[in-house]
Image (cartoon, rainbow over all chains, first blue to last red; front, side):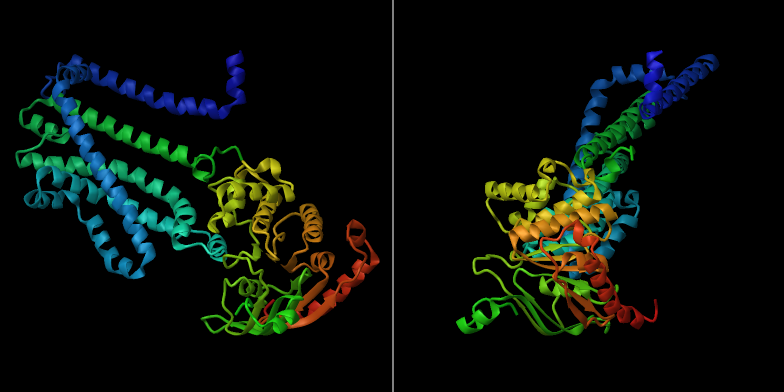
Length: 272
Length: 271
């Protein structure tokens, strides 16, 4: 009775729980159906492994898989950091000088629209493998950071800019106390996209590297297991990649929420 | 452009004036003439209102005085204290919007002018708190702007303008977006602050009633390009209060100012 009272008093809390519980139920039902189909039809594991087999493989091959996971995460992190710093720095440079912006912006777009899977084999020829993989992650992830930061820096309130001018703010003060804080929600939005994209970039590059016969990341494990018809391990590696993507997104969303929660509309509750 | 080190004789003749504009014009890049020629002399400690239709260049006058915008021709003199280290410190500006930084607390917002002027932290916080207390918001120093009502945000904006202890306060339709009751209260608080601090106030508004209630002089401007249509002195028993707002003298002045303003609106054929 009391539980019901709480639920009616706080519909947002109940809705929050539903949003969490419903996908979990769907997930569990899907797994169950998968397991049943495989068992009833007696599908061999090299065609479609049952979820229980995938979990067993994950535990059995944990030594190999965890090493690959670490390698992929490191690549992703390096690509992400490079993209964040590069994207923000380039946006600041563009903001300082129209000449630089006009000269370089078209090439940033070219990098963005050229499919990275087509660039990766070339990079692998000219760069060391580990460097090439990080560069791929960087190329994919840096454009959203650049364009979002540029948008943010150009969204400064005109009157606030006038106020800074009135009080004789130096360019550095204006950047630190006005432009960067004003651009922060946009930058964080860009980073959230970049996190997922750098994982994609890393995976694409690893697959390209894997076909060249070298590699150690999770995507390489998937390619390698495919050649060896070790389908359960392919699924186990895929599961880890997917989990890594979810965790990266979750962490960045959390950081964004914590940073913006006191002032930005996007992080505030919908109570008004 | 600004008067700082002139000869003693010139200095003496100017001491009474806080702001003096002569033949000031402003033409925008697109060729539109927004202002002038415009002459204005404001004595130290005076409270004047600039009243006129939208787009008549009232805000431009303030921006020119604050050096946020350069006049196309004419001369601008703004009296400043000798000891002012940085440009702009002798002037406080209150915009039409509260123009607060949403990402930081009320106290940090009020401290901003001092921070930009590199005033030591402890002193800056003490002065920011004092400025907040003077507008009645001492308890809200740690709040964020979005947690405040429209009237309170405007008070924060006023505290920020006062924190540098400027001689001249420029206010650009500061209460236009507020409800009437809040506006009346802020009008009274502003008058009280003006009486106790003795600052020169140049107040831009398009409300006849507000301009008559607040100011010693109402300067009525023409439609674009803005020139002076009338300069009306408001004389009454000081300090003013709600009694003045309901007096016949007040309504007489309002009628007089409205009559002076009517031709400015008649010129605006598009409205």
